Length: 449
Image 1 (cartoon, rainbow, N blue to C red):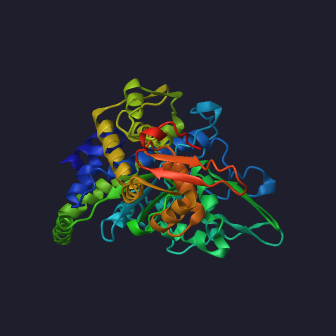
Image 2: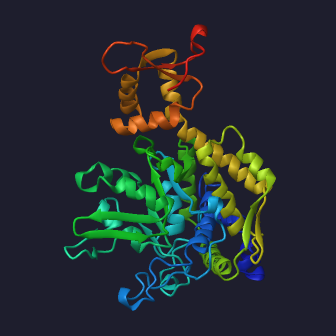
């Protein structure tokens, strides 16, 4: 058994992708072979992000005027300079994940696999408290913008323990992502979306309030699930999150039932062996983080084969960096990681399989609304204002501003979508007419606006 090889070879030399697959197979998880590797890569990107961006800890308590560390112990704290600076900017490499699937499809199962209190593979409260593990938490089902990012009292001091600040350097799971997106629709939390965009992108939280400023940096990674009817990735959020699609059908429902029956009757010896595997993997994650921090690479090089994969037409330009992070995380957490020199991100067969699967899932999710608009209004001409109303009704849950952004991000780049301003020379505002479909031959020279 691989569990015995772990004991012989030690946790530092294990192939975490192979060990993880055996662990979920022996625990009778259903349909996770293409999903668990994404979480492992996300852990790798989280570790590397700590190396690249935490040289000057935003919660540094060395200045007596600021008091002690806000976060007492953090496995990622160090004083090293960043090594990954594309476009002369310090890159943020975190890979946030959102899973889209029907109720009962296993979204929470995957989050709990890693983050469940005490039993999750990343959950290690005792070690995290002494800087030898990661902070982990499963977020609340209801939250406000102030609860997530903070507020100030009359003296201008940040009050309470805002979750984004508290979870710096850790992993934050939400069993229902709509608890965050729905908060933005409430009067007291309308700014939560903007704060989510910046905090998940570059870690910055900054608010100017009547009594003072809320300003800090945070390095948390979010993993969340949501149902298709509640899936909202507008306003740039889709560029911050990696999307996993979880299918649900009668055959898979039967698999779940059979797996549950087998899990319930598992013997004591098998349970003990699996517990040993869990402890070994938990030690591996901690040891790999320490190895990266104490013996970091001196730079990064992506090979030509990987870059060629990114040039595929199915990969949108704004998605390329997400897949680049995935490949980086794979290399950091994989069995061939070596510090002290340039980190070579190579296109292995295993990485190719992971990338191909992830691209297929993303296209299934992100292009579904696009296909709906295309098929519904094919060869239809209408005013842009009417299209905004239709997109709001069919895609963005009645949000007209979100509808405009969705059209800007998704339709303007399509060859089958054309906008043309009215040529009327009279008074009044000139409207914009849109055509969804192939333009007639005499109009092929129409210019998009």
